[in-house]
Amino acid sequence: MVKAMEPRIIPRTGHNISRKQVSPNALRTLYRLHQNGFIAYLVGGCVRDLLLERTPKDFDIATDATPGQLKRLFRNCRLVGRRFRLAHLHFQDEILEVSTFRADAPSAEADTEETDRHHRRPPRHLKDEDGMVLRDNVFGTPEEDALRRDFTINALSYNIADFSLIDYTNGLGDLEQRLIRPIGDPYVRFTEDPVRMLRAVRFAASHNLVIEPATWEILCELSSNISRAAPARLYEEILKLFLLGSAQPIFHLLDKCGLLDALFPRLSEWLHTSSHHLTLMSINLESLDQLYRNRIPLPPPLCLATLFGPALEEAALARDRDGIPHLQALDEACTSFLGELCQIVTIPARVGGRMRGILAFQPGLRRMPPRRPSSMARRPEFADALTYLRLMAAAKEENRTPLEWWDAFLLDPSSAMSSETAIPGAPEKGRKKRRRRRRHSPKTAT
Image (cartoon, rainbow, N blue to C red; front, side):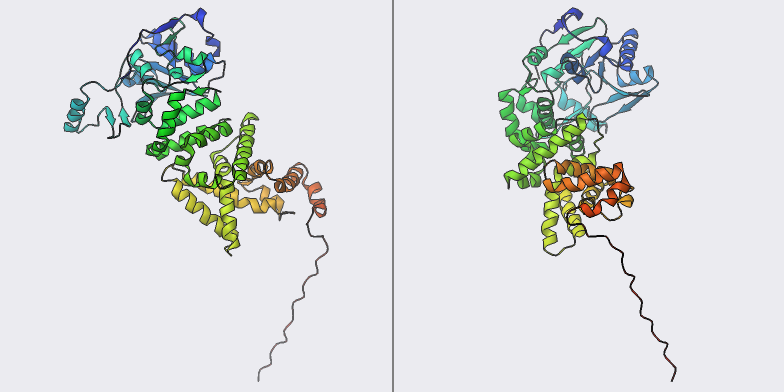
């Protein structure tokens, strides 16, 4: 249990957060809670990002209203979650997450759990034998809620009642020093929820922060524990790591602390068999980040293809050399890889299938000249497959010629088709002779 401390209250004149920067839906929600006698705070990452003069991707709200009270107060409310009971407020263009202030388990936790088991109800707070939190629905005060958050920089609150900033954990000081520091003992916090290690790495890379040295040492020590987190939850975290514009620096931090090896053991092994593999991955992920900065949609299958594609293509090529047809070799490589990976990170079958489709499309895209390009361009996987080729072209010279051809074709199909003979290695066009069928004279009956 983290010790309580007197909060530091920063008045409106002492910080840079303005209501003009806050989502109108979030403001209306905060005002409605306040007007109905409830405490209403903006909390978490949105407060951190506003202080750093970044645009928050969402606005989270914490209140002393219970989930049932929120359900009665907001007609657009949907209650979700088992481990944490949350309210989602559905607006036309946004979904706001509203949580009730939470606390650590009460001191009589064991008695409470025994009573819950006797009455055949799930306990409100439950840990496994190693200390990882499995369920947590214990309501608390604003102070208790702040002290149970992951990092000090995420424990800041913005009070709509007087527009002040509330700091229970010296989060503002750590933010000024650009430090990531857990609230309480890092060993305990990372054991309670191993996903916090991924969050620490993500914030460090995406916000240009530094993980406190003592915390970094413990993170490296506990990195193998990440496999204890729920595989489905890890999939959602992987998307946040690699689809939000900081994939390259995040990847290098994951590799440095051991989390990459714990999450993707086969990929990690492939990467370290050659320095070329590491260079290739770095270039690919930088290109992926550039697509994000250019506001180009990045679907999950494309993200996974960028991460795993080069290794899978190399494995398929090795099988191909042994005489296995290319598509069959690719299927075998993908099936083996995803089967092993899904024991740690759940990859939905639909996403894995689309990733395989992107990779299977590559030989057709790279063939010069391609066969029936107009037909290929109409296939649903074409756009993602071409984007993958574009990513690979940044690292491999041989991919640039087909990419240039396809870019020309999409601009002017007739011009690209007429220039096929200029492509090195392309067969010369000529009129094909029709093969005459042999005519068989009818057999005469004897």
